[in-house]
Amino acid sequence: MRIIQTTQSLRTWRRRHDPLRTSIGLVPTMGALHAGHRSLIQRARRTCGTVVVSIFVNPLQFGPAEDYRRYPRDLSQDLACCREENVDLVFIPKLETLYPQDFQTTVAVRTLSRRWEGEYRPTHFEGVTTVVTKLLNLVRPAHAFFGQKDYQQCCVIRQLVQDLDLDTRVTLCPTIRDADGFALSSRNHYVTKSQRQRALALYQALSAGKAAIAGGMRRADLVEKNMAKVLNAGPGLTIDYLACCDARTLEPLSRLRGTVVLLGAIRIGGVRFIDNLIVRVPQ
Amino acid sequence: MRIIQTTQSLRTWRRRHDPLRTSIGLVPTMGALHAGHRSLIQRARRTCGTVVVSIFVNPLQFGPAEDYRRYPRDLSQDLACCREENVDLVFIPKLETLYPQDFQTTVAVRTLSRRWEGEYRPTHFEGVTTVVTKLLNLVRPAHAFFGQKDYQQCCVIRQLVQDLDLDTRVTLCPTIRDADGFALSSRNHYVTKSQRQRALALYQALSAGKAAIAGGMRRADLVEKNMAKVLNAGPGLTIDYLACCDARTLEPLSRLRGTVVLLGAIRIGGVRFIDNLIVRVPQ
Image (cartoon, rainbow over all chains, first blue to last red; front, side):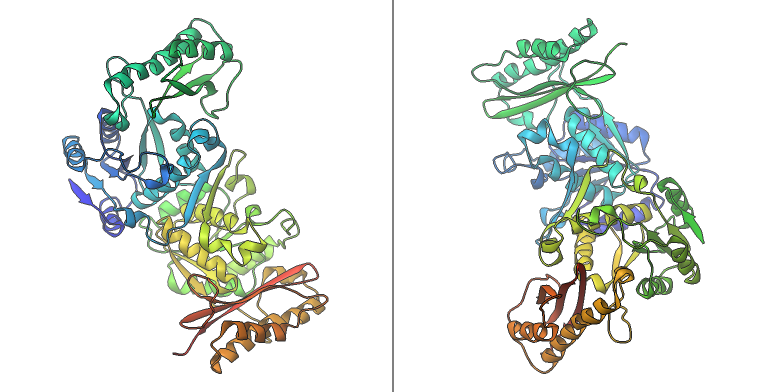
């Protein structure tokens, strides 16, 4: 397994290993790799001749009051994980490599970034789309793999790739969950047992929404009420949003049809949790 | 000479003709080709095995009150010019090809876009950097050629390419002028004889600035005063700006040293003219 830190070495490597740009699969990560990342890497491994994992905690996608400094970092464990998963190249750029002193360019996907996470984290998606544009330009993968856990991010990145003609196929991979349904996330590193216990209600609420739709409910407001009831907001749990949206445009729906995504975000004692479920509404 | 309108055909062509991305030179234009464009194409022809010219009047880089609709368009003459200059491929995307209905992404180079043209045309450079990112991603040229006439644009694009890791070498080519020094521009198509006569003072003013520096003047305010005197603003001629700047950062200077760019923009009866001269200040 090759480890590269500079853009120059990366370019040289890429020209040697994939001159025709047909075989590279990229899994962009911020490290603190868990079973969710492993499943992305495994998916890339099955699809692509060459698998690249990037590890970079991207400051641009953190708000000023967010957890950039305390975001979990454990490089040696991440590298061990990549070795186990038979990754070909790990790209670990330094901060000043991706953002030198005079860096000043921003890539923004307007409409899809506005709602939901965009309302609570106003500069988050700009940070994501800027770094993803850079990574796609540097690695030039034929495929890139993202987890459904961050569903809005996946939509934004798909739009980015289409709008900027990036010539990479974006593959959405299923959310990986613990046995009880709790979605894996690097941020779970600093979630207490009791926070986790309380936060599990988010998955349960989304599941209740899904069940209600399967049971024939078609009014979004009723499904949302259903989900909110399960979440049982109160002291210690705040609902940021809980919505039934069109799975492509992320616009809120009133009557459910087609493919719907149930999006939820809650806060428990300063920690935010997001999750989602995709539901195909029966005709 | 091949003419291509769709991004799909362009990609297919590119994969066949330049799979290793070593030989393509791109000259991005908005059509209405003149001797300035010819010199860019000839420069590309000397440097690159394959020369691509794009012709696209990019609505994003025009302000709402600007001349998008009446911008000169003459495709058959443009194609004749490209044929004469032995261009390999002309890419002429339709509006809806580059900007389909749901297009929503913006690329912005912050600091360098702010001053000078950015003050008078607030969304102009965002439009330029967005379309240039798309064109570079579609054509993937090893080299791209831009005219010094739009000096700030060249600086912005260089920064864009560096910041987004675009892996294209940006080459700045000299401004082409009429015998009297008047800089060629597609917009000259709708400049009257008397406007042209008056606008020539811009080049003369910049030249006077350059001469003053060659004569030993090192205070920017004095050089600027010199240039303004030559321009002789008054009824019918407005100076938007006239400045001595650092050629790399475009920041205004007080004491001249290193490589300086003299930037000027004026308006004469609703038509804007810009021009510039690069001056190496003797030690």
